[in-house]
Image 1: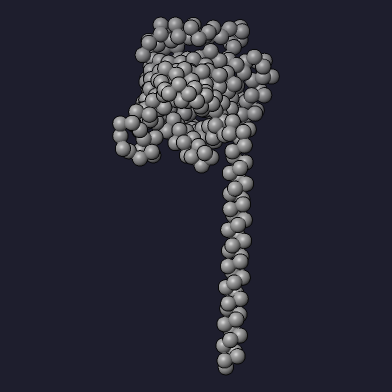
Image 2: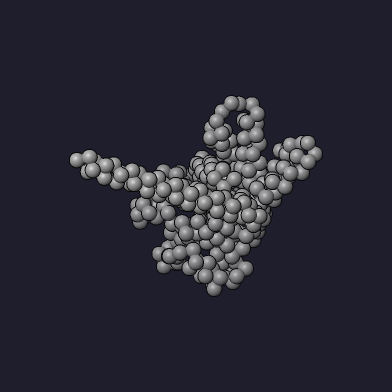
Length: 338
């Protein structure tokens, strides 16, 4: 009996020792893997690339969340073109119309273009902004100073303008896909993807057409980034100094403030951008609007100056959550990869 007991004890002890060895090996492998990942993330090229990667991922997550709101916003901007009269489009009426004419998933029309736009535009703008801000912070520290609001604003404007030029083709494809349903059935392109839309525009209108509306797109991006990035950075810095709130609370409030100012400064340019990117040549080869200035002038004269701010509520609901999700995800990814 005692031999049997001893055998059982020895077997159990051996099993415990083996389990401990396995756990130690697993822990060692886990530590090695974590160390390898950490070392990789801190390589110079990855430190330079991470702001761009984090920016693109955060923008794509945000777009997946708010794409239906963006669809409604574009349709409101195109409603009643050329006239100050007629029924006023509302978010509810536009949503009902889209769903009634097809299906609920039509609210996600252009999602491939929206994701491509974020992969290009937001990757560039947040990456460029973070890179500029990093350089400004190093310079300010060397002087014993802090980065000021004017420098944040300049960084936001520069990042937005450069990124908008890069991302304009995807932005154009998004507008074309979202406005296609407003055309008569015989004239619709029924784009299946952003690649098909870009290819069709290039073949029928030339490669230069992919940068249609680039001027208001750049102006919109500069205004939006001035409102979003500069005010977010400033608001977060002020909240950090003046409150004892948690980092998450500071990020939420700062992104809400940034969303409002981004909407206010950029909506007129977004409105004109939508009109210019949607237009196509008539049978006689003419376009409704010759330029950004011409569009501003004609809309103000024919539809009234307040038309530029039509749908501000919808635009804010599109911009603010997008800004909040983008900045929160970017902050979180920045924390994970710091």
